[in-house]
Length: 308
Ligand code: CO
Image (cartoon, rainbow, N blue to C red; front, top):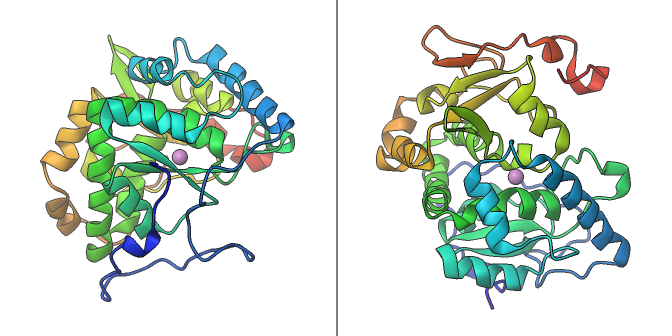
């Protein structure tokens, strides 16, 4: 079965590689994979259904067509948290990907190893109603609703695998932060052009209602065409709405700018630290919308500023 995976098969990290400190809550088994997807109570299934219904109302006119096709193909709205085995079977027929259950955020090299082998690690738990609008750690709704539909798209599926392999190289070159910025501004918070209209493909946006509207319609954030060298030098916001969104023309363009060009030359040209603030709009940028940054300037989420 696709969700079984033996961690002893992960190659050891080369000793010269930088490894981020592991953060593991006490009381968990000494691995980063749940033996199986957990079972959910009735209220937990209901939370999925309510989150699903709320997001589905917003998807038309906001989500890109590839995401919508993926949602249809996988039929994630059958009621309750989807079954990972069933989902993996469908997905592997389409692009060879599967979904594996994990208890929490996993160490970088393990995450990359999974992606490089076309396995998407998805959080097993679901948020409580207290955290209905905003969660700090990715749960099963973010991971499955946000990420899995696009894995049905062959080009995006190849990009994700390439990203996993690029991760191991980034560890070797000590350019992990730069590669994380690329993930952030594409996989999590990316926008795409569709018949001259901006649409969303980033999972971090599509799994919540506020940012789904803010990312496309807000006057505060910048919207800038993706330039990989620039993005990998740009800081980002972890626990609030983004100050800048980057736009691609197609998934082919994204694949071309990264994997086809090769990650090594990119790493070799990068300094270890970020050079650009997350709010920056540069003279060399192709800008679709220069944001007012008023949400950011008023202090963002902590200040109760309105996301405009
Ligand atoms: Co995510």
